[in-house]
Image 1: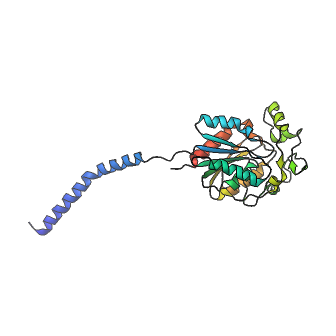
Image 2: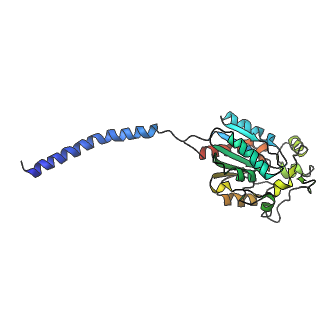
Image 3: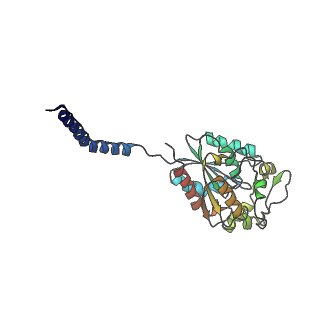
Length: 269
């Protein structure tokens, strides 16, 4: 037999053997891929309230998330200075046993923009909130609202603290909340420090973390146009909901839903 013939036969045998084992190899690869653990949703949720209110307003959202198996922490910010609120929030983040979704309502957006640079934070959720850039304050951002936007009925500061006109609170802050609940909110206001409202964010965590934004289309505290501006600037995934500034009280289901989206979207291995 000629040398070339022997070589050709050897090559044919090698190719035939390779083709015979390929199906088994592919099957093994499929099994290996199936056995690779999928990313799991983040389970730690930290909720940060805004000005004039405290953390109790999150109760319904808290209950919905707890029923879904999330570990939920409600931060009680003193709302006297931004620095203190950021410090309190960071302590809550530090107490978690893993990655965190950080959620802020209204002024709480400035807080989470600042505290969200913590390495444990993997996602930010703004609930009709001030998605602040570094140096932005609540009062500086409000200047970007349309000239004809409703003006929040905030009274002149007294001893360095702000309050809302309790008679106009419901219409501006909680128009879609049960009247008796809105009345209680109006008459249990937490003093909001002027130092907190005028302080600039110390970071803009949305520049390095994924973010979600729940935009309230009937908000009379933060104009929807301003919410559009901030959420677009932050590159947030936006969900629009018909509701007032107190959406976390009136529509806890919608708020819990976007938090769940964030927990699933900011997956970690």
